[in-house]
Amino acid sequence: MSFSSQGFSPEVVKALAECGYEKLTPIQQKAIPMARKGHDILATAQTGTGKTAAFSLPMIQQLIESGRNASRKTARALVLAPTRELAEQIADNIKAYTKYTDLSVAAVFGGRKMSSQITALENGVDILVATPGRLEEHIDQGNVSVAQLEFLLFDEADRILDMGFIHAVRKIMLDVDTDPQIMMFSATTSSQLNLLAKDILRKPKRIEVERANTTAQTVAHVLYPVDQERKTELLSELIGRKNWQQVLVFVNYKETANEVVKELKLDGIKAVVCHGDRAQSARRRALEEFKTGKSRVMVATDVAARGLDIEDLPHVVNYDMPFLAEDYVHRIGRTGRAGKQGHAVSFVNRDEELTVVQVENLIQQRIRRVELAGYEPKQRESYIEKLNSKPAFKNRQGRRNNPNQSATDQGSAERRLAMVKRLKARRASK
Image (tube, rainbow, N blue to C red; front, side):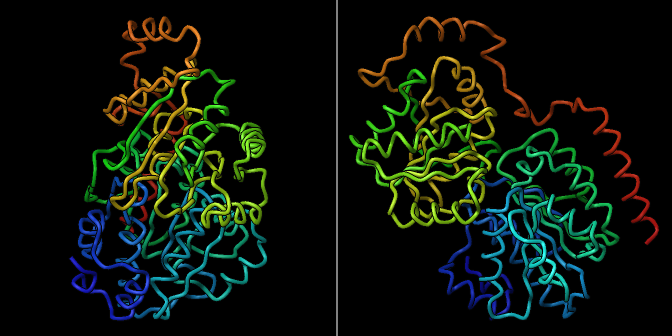
């Protein structure tokens, strides 16, 4: 199925051809026709499946066909993303898609001067890509209005909620006076996400490319049991022995990232670091070095790595297992993209065995275990036997893994109800 068969303008089709887009991916085949018909959408798709084009192309075409222009300090379409890296990536993609059109695109996120963003918003913008926190600042200061939105899109909606932006999202929604078409895209599901979708979507079309909370079928998973103090040694060993040339390593703490990079460099392995304490310019340089092969390894925290778009990344390593099982899906989504083969490696110490159980329950897949000679953890066998013998551990799903579990935050429930009532009242008055 080609893009020209979807009714996109010649200008858009030309731009897509220059981007190297030829045929629609599965998520695009399902989402684009639904979105073109004006339906609200709740879609579950892994990172790297082409979802940016899936949600942005129908919006772009509709904005072109309407013939309207953005008024001063207003946005016609809004795309919300959890981090500045992802927001910047989405904005760059949309700018490429709209290269031959008259549509204006702007991005606002933290880490950049407000003054330059205010200038970009001054004359109004057709498509605004933003992180919730920075957008809230601009709205409060009167730099931009979302009152007349025609489209509202959420990318990685689950991460937006996990990062605590729910209140900012609700506040933004209450500033919308229109009834925009809304699309929510996410890699995982949760009770909080389902509740938000129920609040703001109108008879949404549900789209699932793969089972929710799964990893790509092209990814091979392997787990190495190892004591915490020997993880860096094992990482160097595998990189050298297996001749891995490009490896993205996830850690849970900034201090760990710095220490791992330091140790890798002492072992003669070129490595760069990416975490929240690094300046945006430094993170960009690190990413460029990693992408171009000047550095074999990038060590990153979860938040800093959101939005990293690395084509054909062969290896992802969980140096630390994530705190939430869902984050395993997001991390591993960096490899095995677009049908390419990927390799997901996890280093697991004794205290992380419970997380492994939660991850395996979530992705409904057993992870292959390999004990490397010389790196066997101490007293691991007795601990695993004890762990698996307890139903409470064996059947535990982990926080937010069960999309049907009830919300426990009464205050959030009350605020959600208030928002729904206001939205219904607004629509009834139209």
